[in-house]
Length: 349
Image (cartoon, rainbow, N blue to C red; front, side, top):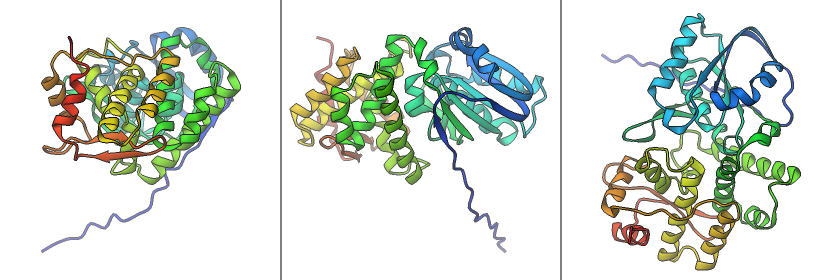
């Protein structure tokens, strides 16, 4: 005997990304702002002045990728339980990608799922991490290996928050902008080469172009079963770097920048990208003082860590490799010898 459980239905998860000055936000429910110590000291009062809610609490976490762990998730959940939040309550992720990912994950599991809103305060989060519904946290095996797809109800990207961004944090966001251009838009990449992102108007244009690109990709492949994996260009290598340095040596965007250079070196060896194109990408990253070099102590150990990547399956490692500028290939067919040769060029002398 079989019983059919018919769950065929269409759910509209659409939402808007508002790239503008934050206006008053009204919520007829309990709201928690999840932030970190750095953002709280700089911008919390500004945000609180914009929010009207049935009740409002603030959950403050330590700042840094090393705190993107289960202990921080538990802190969010415990404070929500203490405040008697219910399924109609709402979380606001107020910070960079780390806060956004953890807040989204907490929202996805609290009483089997509640709504959350993203108010990103870093360039990296505004152009990439806040859009698309990826949530999660890190563990000793790697980055974001525990998580869920849980789309926000809205995203508000206000350039006001970028004014206090340290130079390194700003550059880390630029790395994700460059990633979008290399993978999907050669004209955008060429524009970036001559653009000055310290100019407010040009920065706004770069944020808008990046968000539109990310939105186009996510709309076609929300759960990363195909095209969306291309957005991990630079990340397969970068995540290993972050893991090896215990998330303390590099900001996420910095590790991604090095990862993109490694991916480009692979592309050049495969004949998919010219040396001139690879140099142009490297030059653009270095224009913003992003690192493009990492010393690998053990090539074999570095390579083995690839197997923990979420895109890899069984014995096949999936790599995101550019094909010229504006194109990208998602492949698990690259011979290990080719990758190890590239890694060998980064080995400690």
